[in-house]
Amino acid sequence: MRKIFLISLIFILALTFTAQADEIKIGACIYRFNDAFMLRFRNAMTDEAAKLGAKIELSDGRDDQNVQNEQIDAFINDGVNVLIINPVDRMASQPIIDKAKGKNIPVVFINREPAPEMLNSYEKAFYVGAKAEESGTEAGELIAEYFKKNPEADKNHDGKIQFVLLKGQNGHQDMILRSKYSVEAIKNAGFEPVELASAIANWDKLQAMQIMNAFTMAIGPENIEAVIANNDEMALGAIEALKNNDYNKGDKNFYIPVVGVDANASALEAMDKGEMLGTVLNDADNQGIAAVRLANALAANGDIKAIGYEITENKYIWIPYQKVTRGEKK
Image (cartoon, rainbow, N blue to C red):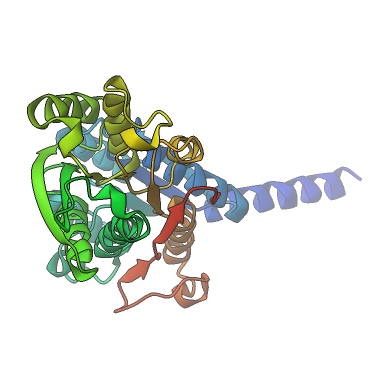
């Protein structure tokens, strides 16, 4: 009996050890935790890792590339099987790839796209995200569609759209492309866009509110016909500044259309209140799920083509954007 018990105990311990040995360990570095969009992204990753039976640990880079570099080193030293990286500085991606390649660790970049030559320098480097030019185009289309439906929005009746632009982080590809393509979409819709002012607000609501307050003082809210923001947090900051000037509080005669990107909960609420015109869904849920599925498959030497998301150029998973207007819930 004792012999049978010992054999059973050894068998159970062997199974336990095997399960632990086979558990995928994912080290995920986020550029900054207190970012509303990346919060949704993190939650999606955590939930998907739990479904797959993988262990995921997330670190807050606190918007400091040096801090994030130390966190990546710690993950590598801790023996993670795969890295998911949301770099603070996308131009710092090459040293991260070199470190991962040196240890034969797959790396999946998210949200901030490394240059193609960087990804191509390592066969186990990938990117999951959304094409920023799509979000810019759709944001601009929301403005153009509003002006077509509401001719009175052209306050001075000159056939032009006088707008202010709130930009994300300096040098960030999303900032560059969203800014460029939103203006191009207005032009392609038959309007002449006229930029009254623009400024970097670093994706931040408070900074955007302060900048928009300065814009209203310098330009006058009565002369601003539209506000384009690279994300919802900055759009919401702009709305707070407009409300301080008694705009966007329910009176049609004192309303300026504001658009953002992300479709976060606060933006949807502002749209329901009639304070915000619209936004563009940046699908954090599907991006987070895709990143974890890809990372898990890479770490397990599984079939990455069977994760439920198309991989283009053997390097990219692109999640489409979607326009959201008042009354729609995402």
